[in-house]
Image (cartoon, rainbow, N blue to C red; front, top):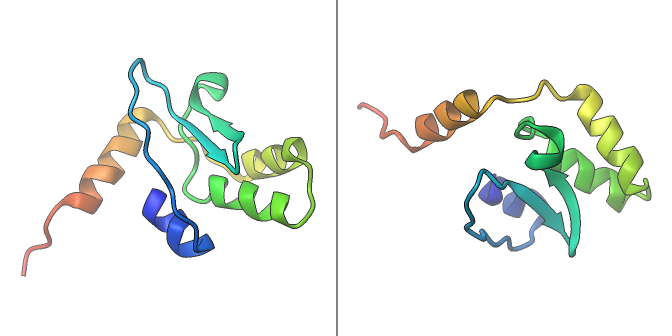
Length: 92
């Protein structure tokens, strides 16, 4: 996700390791997504949509609400499968 956001917005990202199932995303020092608050991982484009909407003048609350309405919600298992699939070498 970090690489995808870096490519999309031409900004650097930083992974801060933690424990206890914490998965939070900040943009410009503001918390924009929290797995602990929502009980789920973000949908594929949910974080990018929040960033785009706030950059276009929407309030954070409105941007989160709009992005969540189109989100499917991703279980940890599905999220992990997606990450592992991306890291698997492709067979020639």
